[in-house]
Amino acid sequence: MQAGLIVLCLAYVLSQFFRAFLAVLTTDLGRDIGATPEDLAFASGLWFLIFAAMQIPVGWALDRVGPRRSSAMLLLIGGAGGAGLFAIATTPFHVALAMALIGVGCSPVLMASYYIFAREFPPAKFATLAAVMLGVGSVGNLVASYPTALAVELMGWRATLGGLAIISGVVAAGIWLTVHDPNKVETEHKGSVLDLLKEPALWTILPLMLVAYAPSAALRGLWAGPYLRDVFDLSTTQIGQATLIMGAAMIAGTFAYGPLDRILKTRKWVIFGGNALGAATLGLLCLWIDGGVWLSVLLLAVIGFLGASFPVIMAHGRAFIPAHLVGRGVTLLNLFGIGGVGLAQFATGRIHAASAAISPSAPYTAIFGFFAATLAIGCVIYLFSRDSVD
Image 1 (cartoon, rainbow, N blue to C red):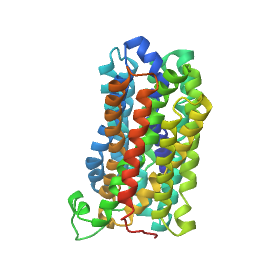
Image 2: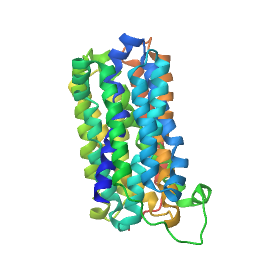
Image 3: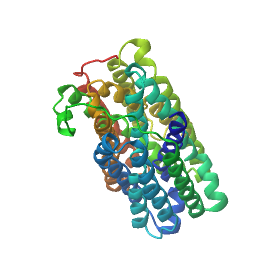
Image 4: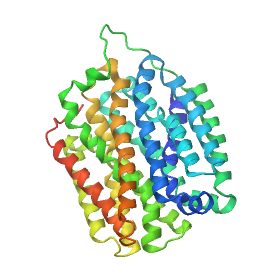
C-alpha cells in the first residue's frame, strides 16, 4: 500500500500541474493559436467543472470498484489523452477540449488516496495525512511555474505537453501495478449522495468548501499570469518566478494547516481564522492593485498560504460521513471544492471581459474583489457549523 500511495502522490503531482500551468502559457498560446485570457479562463474553468462533475461517478466507483482501477483507467484515457490533444491544438477550442479530458483523468487521483486514508488509518490522523498528500503533491504547482516556463522556452509548449502525455501514461500504469484496494465495508446499510445531503451539519461546511479553494487555485492557475503581465509588464520567465513563489506558499500553507486541528483541539476556528484572513488579504490586493510588483507577489503568496485549508475542511466534513459512504462523502466535498473553482473561473472570465477596456488594472481589481466577497460570505455561513475533532 505504501508503494501505491507514493504512485498516487505522483499522479496528484500531475493533477496539481494541470490545474496551474495555463498561467505560464498565456503569452505563448495567445501568440501561436490566438487564445485570449477569456479563452484560457473558459478552458481552466472547464477543467475544474468537469473534474467536479466526475466526483459523483468517482465516489460510486471508489465504493464499488475500488481506487486501483478507477484511478489507473481514467488517468490513462483522460490525462495522457488530454495532454496529447493539447500538444497538437491549433485553436482555443482544442485547448478547452483537452483541458476537459485532463479534468476527467485527474478526477479520481486525490480522492483515491483520501479513500485509502479514511479506510486504512485512524480518523484522528485523516487531516494530517490529507495535508501531507496535498502538500507533497503540490510540487506539481511548483513545476507548473518557473520550470515549465524554462521548458517552454527551451523546447516549445507542444513538446512539453507531449512529454507530459507520456509521463501521465507511465504513472497510470504504475497505479495499476502498485495500488491495492481496501477491503469493502460489509454492512446492511444502503445509501447514496442524497443521504449525505440530508445531514444538516454538512450544509454549514459545503458553502465554505465551495469558495475557500477558489481564490488561490484560480489566481495561481490562471489570473496571476495576465495580472502580472498587464499591470507590471512581466515576461513569461518573470511570471514563472512569481507563480513559483505563490506555489511554494500554497505548499507551506498546506503543511501548516495539517496538524493544527490536533494541536489547537479545534477544526472550526482554524478553518474560519485562516479563511477570514484570506478574505482580508484579497481586499488589500484590491486596494494596492498596482502598488508595486513585489507587494503584489507578496500578497499573492499570502493568499496562497491562507487558502490551503482544503484538507482541514475535508476532515471537518469527513467527521459527519458514515463508513459505508466514505467514497461518496469525500468526493461530494471535493465536488464543491473543485466545482467552486470552475464556477469562479467562468465568472471571472466574464468579469475580465466586461472591465478590460477601463484600465489595465480594473479587471483584476474586480476579480480580486469578487473572490474577497464570496469568501467572506462563506465564512459567515461557516460560523454556524458544528466543530469536530476525532
